[in-house]
Image (cartoon, rainbow, N blue to C red; front, top):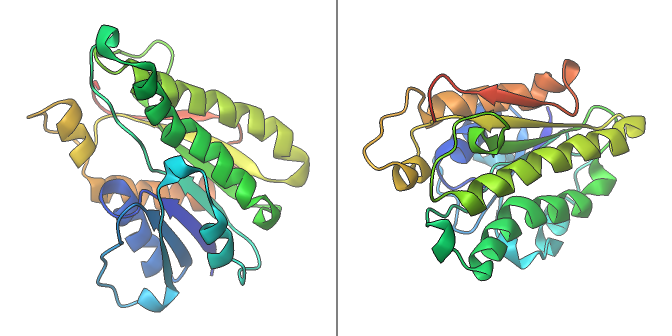
Length: 224
């Protein structure tokens, strides 16, 4: 049995990841702005925490896992999205997106630092829009640049934490059929469902750090 934290857990990839981890008998703390509504035979393994990540107050998270011996995996799946022409994107817009996609990632990781030990894996869910050389799309200047910042942050943290045996990796996702994708590209049908990607993420957070550390892995069969 492992101990896992998943942000953005009320829908889409986050919710499907939680389902897989519970099915496998792990303990999970599901973090989201709204309540995690989940009917599951293993709900006794689930804790949930309603939290606005942009507030950068993680005291409720620390309290929720106070009885855990460790955190085996922390999945930073939550993301703030904005599709707006650059000229119309305000500095407040940039701050709002970065507060969730970068600052909250750093803050939450710091908050649970004492629970990270040898074999722990911190996983950032990034985007192909944050990867150098991939196709970029107009209107996503704040979102895609924040996802690029997440990748670089995790490369740095992998170096900083390697003497402790804690691994950091990023997954740069392509098109996945979620509500966020529909907002970005209305009418686009993605080749991968949230359920499929949730299963991939749940497997990777458990096993990927055996082969990777400080890496960004493109997970995309399409453009975007």
